Amino acid sequence: MRALVVDDSRAMRSILSRILAKAGADEIWEAGDGREAIARIESSGSPDLVLVDWNMPVMNGLDFIVALRRNTDWRRVTIVMVTTENAQSQVVRALAAGAHEYLIKPFDECALLEKLDLLGLYSPEQAGRSALALNSQGHI
Amino acid sequence: MTLLSSESVSQVTREIWAALLAGDGRPDLVPGQLPGSEIVATADISGEWNGTVCLSCSALAARHATAAMFAISDDELTSNDIVDAIGELVNVVGGNIKSMVPGPSVLSLPRVSEGTDAALPQHLELAQEVRFAWMEEPVVVSIWTTTAFTP
Image (tube, rainbow over all chains, first blue to last red):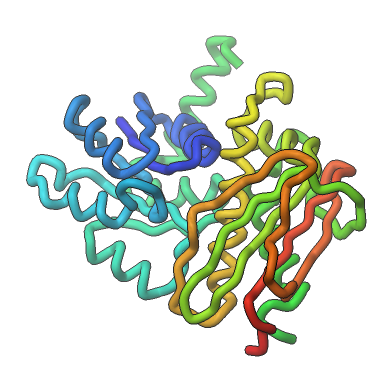
């Protein structure tokens, strides 16, 4: 799985990236706003998953989702909005724009992994097998 | 109990600490009265309700929080890391406080001031303040408004 984390906070990107690594993401890219994220996708290709914040400078998360969905090459990207915006009207706007799931900050690791499980991007059983394989190779 | 009761502000702040800063043996946020606030981060709520959410803490608490969020040791931190991490914390606190006050409203991007001259909001009225201790360091969440908050 290739994942892109879009958040203006490097600290939040770090937290999200660590969870994605645990979920088995092979590649994790980061961007500080929507425009930077679009540039990254244009240069590196489409990721399988995007985690995107709402409130960011330059281009916010909602505008980013709209831009992403306008491009037919990127329509298969799975999008999870990760934000403090918790009004029902905001959730509806994000889903209508093209987000698949919505996660409200603060969240814990289990909450994000459950969302990825729902989206078919993470399997707890597979993660358990990976950990066992690592153990048997003496890497942990 | 008002929407901005000390209990509700305390609860949301403790949930944020537990979600973002737990692990590696770090303790929970607990009520406390400790002196010293050297880092001040604010985020403004504008709309149906107007005010400022403020997170202030000691420099050491800010370092501990930043190290936890970046999962690196204290001695690897830069001042930019601290500004980023404490800014994100006030952003999350502010976003959750925004849901407790009349809307619709928008939350500004966070501002972080470092140093002993870090200033709390001026010309605003204190609506609520909750004081905590975390790793034996002070953490204070305060909410300031242009008018007294009467839901």
